[in-house]
Image (tube, rainbow, N blue to C red; front, top):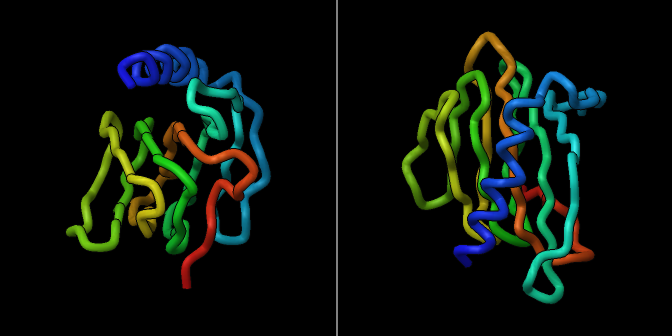
Length: 135
């Protein structure tokens, strides 16, 4: 597990400094855009690491959803409100890191006036959707 954490740090450091060089994507109707930067096999069979740049427009929400693995994210800019089922809502800003365990229902919203930008690292089961909406 220490090797995984080190690999994640090594993979995300260049991304954080090189955000301006990444391609843009069209925004979804919810104001959420997720650009997959890279996908790679990991040491555990049947799992992969996905690194994505995520942007949430002012006033937008991700909607309640889950992931088929752990989400480890670093807030690059903006302000967000993170709600994880069973926990108090938390405000996150640039420099914060968050970890959301496998299958935990959560939702991000952007109460600010500027886009919320984060780098998400997802350690997930292969062949499953990255995010599944929860109603």
